[in-house]
Length: 112
Image (cartoon, rainbow, N blue to C red; front, side):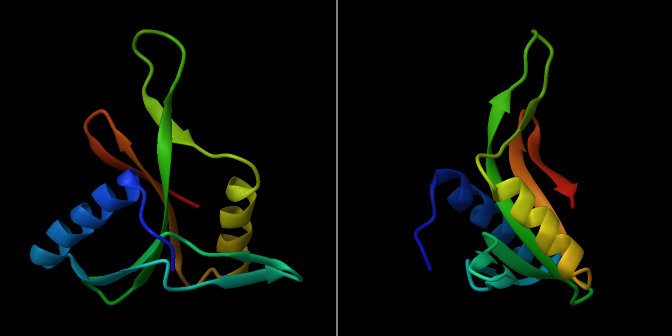
């Protein structure tokens, strides 16, 4: 388990508030690793159990502002991270896979 960066720490605070509200039963940081292929693994930043006890895996990303005055922030992914979460979602469809980023109006998610 690594240390959280600033964005991950903010997402942990967000999950803590959802837990307090009863929408999240529990959450953990970098607690699960999924084998995708020989010598290839993926560790999502968080997993949590929602109020229905369904497991949700979340990869938290920083943001990059698009071009233009009115463009929205979008998650910024480097290297093979986008491919890994897509492969993980395909290989382990029994879980919900999300990418989360901090947008202009709060947390945004995209299901994979």
